[in-house]
Length: 315
Ligand SMILES: C[S@@+](CC[C@H](N)C(=O)[O-])C[C@H]1O[C@@H](n2cnc3c(N)ncnc32)[C@H](O)[C@@H]1O
Image 1 (tube, protein in one colour):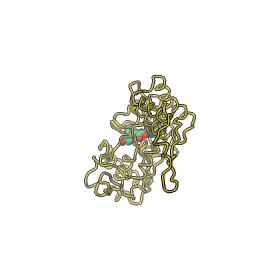
Image 2 (cartoon, protein in one colour; image 1 turned 60 degrees about the horizontal axis):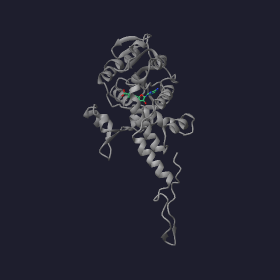
Image 3 (spheres, protein in one colour; image 1 turned 45 degrees about the vertical axis):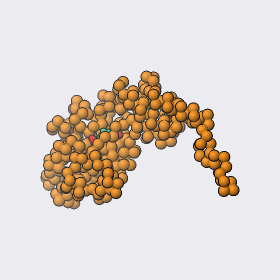
Image 4 (tube, protein in one colour; image 1 turned 60 degrees about the vertical axis):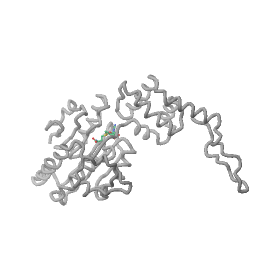
């Protein structure tokens, strides 16, 4: 940890500035720390440090960092060291794992997860949702095999685009769903992503796959001319919460779960554990929508395969 005293600005005496601040005349400690950071730019985690961090990450998230990720992990952790002004990976590891850095576990998880997402990602899944799933639910309600309620969960929703896309699809079907009780839940392990989802402001690139008509109807251009705010009425329909897929979901059973682009870095054991929790969270007849690269098809034996991306829990 840096030992230099910060914030010692020169005080004004009789209108004149006294000795300039110590910040302007770096102490031995600050220059040493700066030198160490510069050196660190060039250093990576040692294999031993990498192994300790990845074991810790695995235990917390289920994500298995492959051998080739040592540079990636070094770069991401180095940013945390810089923000915290800690000058060694070892020191950071000890403080993190001994709970000496309040709130840092969340920051660390943010730094090591990949949060890439956008509206209408893999558009076919949302066409299925609008054109098949909603009509099927309406038919089941008409046949009185299901009440007029709909629970949808975007598990690992990142900054919320997936759940808001589903909210848009539901809004577009509102005529057929009038009088229905609808609960939309988005969750992610990253607190920062959940905060962003609740704010509902998205950069241009997030909307690249949204049609102009939908952008116009559901979003407002922000003064920075680079981002869009989603309609508050949609924010109000969505609940976002932090949730780790390795833990069971505490919520009523879901009619549809989207779980996409999250298991890429999970090993088989973590996938199994998360998939068990997802299947438990599904209502009988509930649907599971999986991403193309998640590699969980062979773990979905309890569900009936409906298509390449769609699985159903038996009634
Ligand atoms: C690439 S994003 C996918 C977002 C969205 N599902 C999509 O397909 O666009 C993956 C998300 O999984 C989250 N994640 C990783 N491990 C998790 C875990 N154990 N529990 C819950 N979320 C996790 C990450 O924080 C990240 O936001």
